Length: 297
Image (cartoon, rainbow, N blue to C red; front, side, top):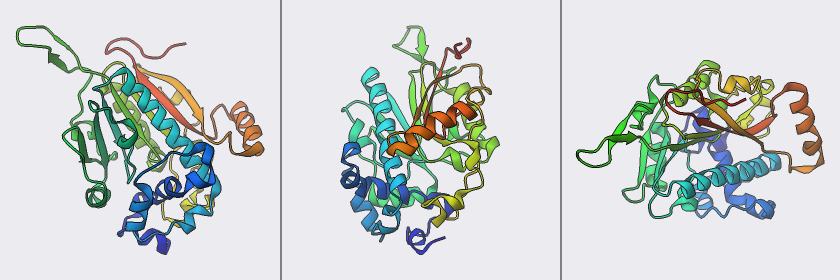
């Protein structure tokens, strides 16, 4: 692991990759003003970790990708909050990001979840704010991470008031930024399956993923190679994203890098036409009703 990554309070390999999006949001606005996100905390938090960001800024493509995917996740979550003003947004593998700064409407609930070693830093630098904001330890390699987060399930019923019939649990919005690609294939699919089985109807899960060709090649990535993390999973087909639960529907796949110069504008459509999956994209999965199928033709 690089000395820069080691300085991040001794984080292990995969958690140390949080420095990449943190630096991208701290310095990227000046490089790509058309994608500016206006993160109020990133530069302060990065400096508190003793990282000047110089190493990560050399990788302009990753800086662009961080901003583009941040805007995509932010927009998808904001759309959910607009439709569900008191809804619950869950950031799986939150790292040291602060999406609440863009989403809080005074009513929504936010859970930022990550491994204990990350939360130890987060509690110091980005503590929970108020009763509607919760920090929660979670390991997506655990068999029942859903229960560990205390999330409602598709089968849960809640009484609207005493003596009234119950109603289904409200939809959730979950997202995982730079997370699933580092999980073993069986575990990545298990996460999707758990969401499909447990999430209330109408819920959304957004996550980014690179295609299967990058698996085992993190050493070629200009930023990730400075950590000991490895790419372990990427979809081979779009169908596999919904294959493990009949309630799942692929709502959209949003390519991330097409705006980064003409090579990507040409390469991304050609790549998807050839292999059937984007090179790198944010995917939206949604859950159908508890009994029926979520997938649509």
